[in-house]
Image (cartoon, one colour):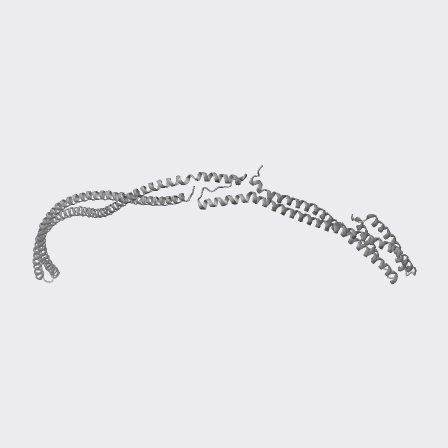
Length: 530
């Protein structure tokens, strides 16, 4: 059964993964053993060696202090007790480590107990400055040697175990490196073989297929043979390309004939589009000229409408002024009528005043006569008083006063008479002037009434003119509105025609682009060789 391309491409990752798993497994197994040995060294062997060395050094120091106590007769019991307690504690801790020989350490503890028992006696003798202390110290030497040798043995045993474990760790590490190196080399060899196989089975067919496809694209030769012997996806791709080339073989001839027909149709479409563009351009120019003419007409119509509005305003003002003038003339006529009536009344009053002045003159005459008579009477009285002598002297004074009063009355009467004459003269002149003014006023009233009649006729004519002006303005306004609408329609038509011309021009350009594209298709159809 032939392998698929996906299966072939998975060979290299599978081999690499298998060797990687093997390397990881070896590393894990050997690493676990190495870690276990390292943990044994760190947790048991190294501390036990250190503890044994410390106990050995402490015991030697204790024995030396005991000898110094005997030699110097200077016993430091507390120091010795502390050293003993520290050694016992160290031996107990050493016994607790799993890699230490427990019975041997226990025997050392017993030997140390015996040693310290004898050493205590030596210290006691030294404390009493007993001469037997040196002999006792000499007897203590075998116990010291036994204890010292035991500690040396335990220390050597632990150091040997530690060295063996170190060697085991080193061996495991070397084995790990060896296995990893062997597996890596084997992986490289297998991957190289798989790569060569993959190049022969996958890359080479793909390269041949790519070269053939590139040559077909570059030269346009659809008659080239394609290797379809592969049974995987590359072979399926080659067979698909072969089928595509077979189908493409019929495309150039069909494409050439279609391009020829489209080129002819595009040429006809281009000619029709060019003719339509010329016609539409001419129509657009005509519409532009018509738009300009209508714009001028609209401007003239607007000016006429404006002037008609001005005429209408002037006519309205004339109508208003005429009506106002008529009202003013009517009011003037009424005022003149009232003035005429008042002048008539004034003339009548002046006549009455003249008559009263005449009566006043008559009364003044009577008063003058009375004054003359009073003067005569006063003169007579004075004469009679003079005749009476001394008795008529008082009456003479009265008569004298009456004559003086009569003289004053006469003078006043004369002055009043003179004034009345002047008043009568002024009244007569006033009456003459009033009569002349009344006559002139009558003539003025007649003229005003005549002017009022004429102004009524003028007002009627002005009203008729205003009505005609309104009709003219309405007609001109309606005409202007129609011309404005016509201008808008022509403008819209001109814009639409411009859009149509632009669209036709774009269509002509599109036809040109189609011709260019068809030319490219024509060139493309000739590049294939079947």
